Length: 250
Image (cartoon, rainbow, N blue to C red; front, side, top):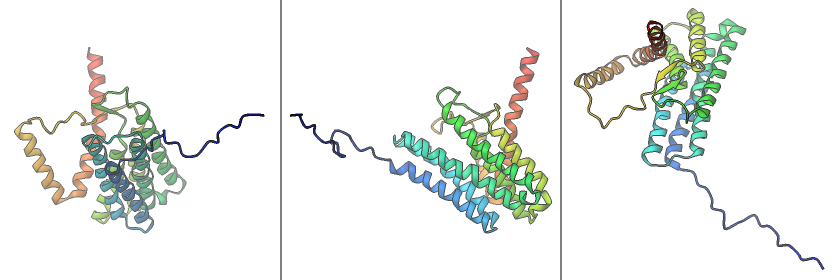
């Protein structure tokens, strides 16, 4: 007679159930909701709320990682979830908002420009995840996707507040969309601010600059935020030009 083998059960007490940290993923879920809300508002024609929702998603996206590090709740699941949330909030949402606001009037070129931005955001996030351990932490390789989304959404927000329809600036909007998308997948370096330590002492003018920034945001948040990210988007090209000039002179 053959010996009967014990049946395999679905429950194995030796395997521990892996849990998911709630606190950092709450911020990621909130950022994902803000990105989805921006898409819904763009479909309904409320572009000002759509642009504001993208900026809210950017703030929440910056908080989830810091909360995870502060509470020691970092996980592989959280990193993957954050990337998927970023793809919605800073890839699909800005592309759709810009297309519905201005690029629709360009016909085929409009949706191609929106797709180029969306595809570049996906490539940027994939490259960031695969080169996370080998790049210099002080710099980003290519424009970060939240900053690119802020360029696109900031332009829409400024124009809406100024009462300017998207059809009047459709070519300029197309150029900004392509600039933001292609810069994300470029090799231009951008300062990451990750070595900025709040516990260290800073010069007096730094506190004065922060106070001035709060004042400008309270007066005109759309112009201040858009202007800041325009300067940040150009800063990488300035640093690249300075570095190239130094190599040539050396």
